[in-house]
Length: 222
Image 1 (tube, rainbow, N blue to C red):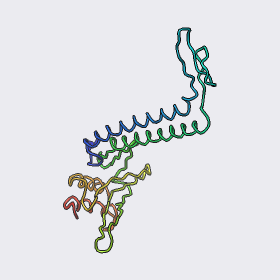
Image 2 (image 1 turned 45 degrees about the horizontal axis):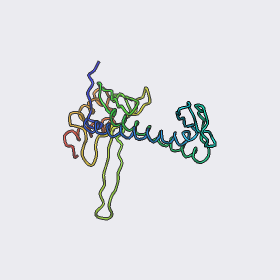
Image 3 (image 1 turned 180 degrees about the vertical axis):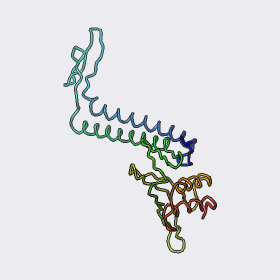
Image 4 (image 1 turned 120 degrees about the vertical axis):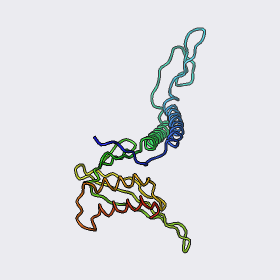
């Protein structure tokens, strides 16, 4: 089995720790607000119990103090109940989003095993064999400023679609005009692409992309 070679993709360890701590507070806060929403939707209809010298009493629906432990009612209804449910639902969505973002930052990673590239996201891990996959080098361009002061920022990535699983994986390669992967990792990606391939012509996309990765390895600003 080929060794697992980690790629420098994802947040550094220090950022993962900080984000996890902040995310935990966000989750706890969202859970607290969700409980407040539940109390608003259902708590007002819960009968309040009290203890006296003559036994238990409770406040009935008319606001009178009557003997007995009382009974728990259901949904409050009305505007108050709808607002409570809405608040609780929104809070739970916030908690779910916070948990997803924590997993996305903490779990995100990529590595090579031979010619197979693995990319792990918040929940799933996908892979593609770079030696047989269909490759593309994605890029997006953003412009800021106007006229002579216009600045263009390019973001380039390596994408591979595995022919067997039809799954597509992608990792960032270059950002703000410079590569974000070390030279040795860029060379390993290029080798994983070409070592087991047969070159069809000079315009073979896989070999063009591999050549560009080697250019980046020799000159990060090329």
